[in-house]
Length: 213
Length: 327
Image (cartoon, rainbow over all chains, first blue to last red; front, side, top):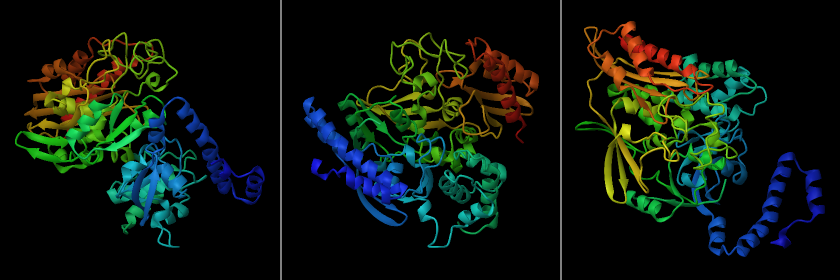
């Protein structure tokens, strides 16, 4: 494994030429490569041969994300959020609190909105996932995406993918018929910039419009 | 999160067997509480048994009432037509808890098994007899604003966080569980326990037991119900105090009353004496106040939660008023 480890010169070149995301990907790859052998050695020293197998065992999972079927292998502790972002590189879904309190990680599983940070990827074998990347129809934005732009439903934008995924579900569920209902049924999505009035307006407008979302 | 093994159960008996076989094994369904606890280092299972593919999702009419499978989602129960027709207070309670995302994941069985949100339980650097028996209770001399005023002990003053369970306690539900020795049933009121000397046990489940479902017995239908939850913000917060009220009123006279409170004890707190005080009486504010006074007798407060006595009283009165005024 040591031979796979890139030398420092290579890393620097890539860092100089790469984007911030490339850097993040590169550094997480490095961390994995550097740490794995040490962990293995430690486990072997403690006579935990059986544990090594368990610890490094990855479980195959087949799931459909935005209409595309993926066959992946994950450790049991990998959340659906981390699978989407780190393995499938669908980074539109955001990690906020990572504890189900902020809603930035909201995706649809078999049509229902859920917090992907509180869900294990292995438990989604056979499920259909929709993320923010799967909402638009080619270059044509989803009506709620358009409405968020029109009503200025965001400032920094970090919570926006979660807000929109949650908002679409809120409309489909029939919980977007009044502004107070929208506020109640969107309470799982926190916006630290405080764009709530405009988020509510955007959802209400699309809901009132009656078009299929 | 610590590493763990993962297996998927396809049969109930196999799930029970898997839990009995290995010491540090837990069931996982919605995961909304367990995964959070695992990330915080509060729960550290070596193995998880995924029970979400077991056929325990039905909500159906039975000869004696309504059966809700342990794996029915909180959102499914809250929107189910049988529940809305026969036991609307349960739907009100469910919808007052968590968020739609969490209700879409959380199951009925998981809701019953959720752990306290006491800050000392969640912080592994703090003493907590529930998390680590014998380590002490950080809340008793600490920040105990959210804590119990009924049924607490010198070991633990945590409260049970569920809204759903408050309604199920009021509705005289029963719980069916499957264990290594077979099935057994218990009244919902006996499912959760008071902390006593063993706050590490939230409930009376035995090792390996799997909740199969909950049965709500038929009762005379009534629209005179309320679930009033008082909290620090309008939505998505745990109860400071909550009250489930179910009344049968005929000609202005209360024929039957069921009352339970949340946010005040280690388990859903049924108010039998207050209920008895209402039966045969007129549905008036004075009678509601008297019931509330009876209900709050014996409350024991700590440094920061004294407010819960008056708040509890007023919440009972308001819940009864709301329930009685439903046309």
